[in-house]
Image (tube, rainbow, N blue to C red):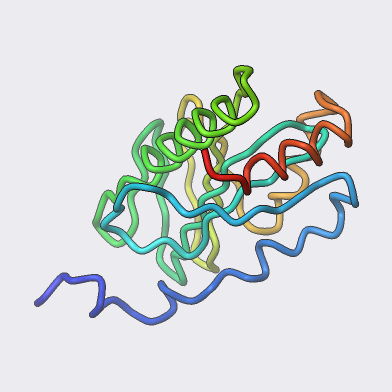
Length: 166
């Protein structure tokens, strides 16, 4: 069987527009598109930045459909494969942090978030380090749980800076 991403089911590549609609976050939060500079071989449903009073989060959405997902520390397994989504989420957060730090001129911490979008079961045997994991319904609660670390005005300025080239 050919294992190329083009032959994978279409639900893997569907846009995860529902993930971006986070009405509970409020007007102080900004959702910014992010296109990574490096290639990632596995299909990613969506990738964006969530910037608000809780801080800056690099969000990577993995559409797993009905497949069962197992998370054990830094390892994520789905359909017998171990795609590198956790490492990719970290790499994206590091890339965003470097970009924002270059544009702003100060070190900007960015947290990696992996969102699991699908109806299959999720089993967790230990969370990864330096990467938050949530399902679609819990993403807004996860972002709000960070508390108020920056002001809404700072969040707005960081959102503008994220859209600016380095």
